[in-house]
Amino acid sequence: MDQSSSGALAGLRVVDLTQVMAGPFCTMLLADLGADVIKIEPPNGDSTRTMPGAVGTDSPSFNAVNRGKRSVVLNLKAKEGVEAVKALARTADVFVENYRPGVMETLGLDYASLSAINPRIVYASISGYGQTGPHRSKGGFDLVAQGVSGIMSVTGEPGGAPVKSGIPLTDLGAGLFATVGILAALQSRQRTGRGQQVDTSLLDAGVGLSVWESTQYFSGRGIPERLGSAHRMSAPYQAFRCADGFITIGGANDRTFHRICDVLGHPEWRDMPEFKTDGMRIRNRADLAARIEAITTTQPRAHWLELFEAHNIPCGPINDYSQVFQDPQVIARELVVDVEHPTLGAIKALGSPIKLSATPVDARRRAPLLGEHTVEVLTEVGIRDQGSGIKSAGSGIKST
Image (cartoon, rainbow, N blue to C red; front, side, top):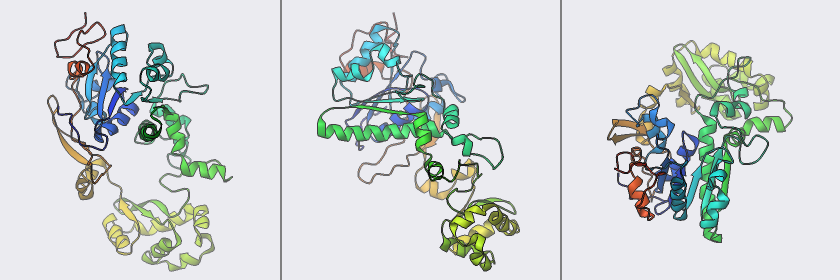
């Protein structure tokens, strides 16, 4: 697999000691941007390698968050494996781990230990609850973090049961926040010559993304409640039923609301006291939504989408994923890419949402086979006498 890169982060070496989603997603973004990401895996590989759809130790799930990396198999229960990680860290710009706080310290792979041998290293830790605080030692799971951070309390229909977000918000959010922290720390290193530790967590991500919810609570307007698809700061701004399904309508200001009133044939709504301002529309959201839906249910989605768009009213269909990946705009933005994999064959994968004009992002490289680059990478750092901590799948190097 060709690892040469002309991306924005070309020349940057990342040691990736992460598994499952939050950490791998972070390091995959760095790989997409051109960094040389060396993924350290245990002898049996990252657990996502055997998720549904797997062929042996390769799965679409693993490929989804590990493309463009190099895989090195090391047994961290053996001294030789730990020493090999330290050797890689001496040459690295970035080190990313997502173990429970304390595990890296036990292994001698914590920030204090690695910065002592490489003061320039940027060391990122992604955990369930962070490196500090009374719950730091707890494990990290997206479902649990969505509950603890409040996300589930505001997701779902009014009066209904709490609902998890359909996508793993805290896992992916933690990965994104860690990536931002890493890039900021690298910029700081340009000035100071020294690295630093980046510390974020699933809980941090869930709370950090609760922008409107925290605003409602901090401003004394009560504990944020479940609103279904509605917006807590604007109305009408939610999904509405049509004769054959649902669409979204975004009436986020007075001007747009006035156009909605006109299109629906009720200009008198503009001047009704309960709908005159956005604040009043929020208070009377349910009444307003019922009035709108009584009209939209009389015609199919296509009718309303065409009419609203003709009057410059923000709207859209609610697509399932078969429709998403056939959307001409999604295709034009290269958000679906074709990848050739030696085990999985031809697969489709998500493209990158990051567009750079001078150093384009490369999201078409496949994920590595288990241990595919063990010999290559360790040879680069001068390790040729492999011991019991080192094992390369299919490379001829075996544990003793």
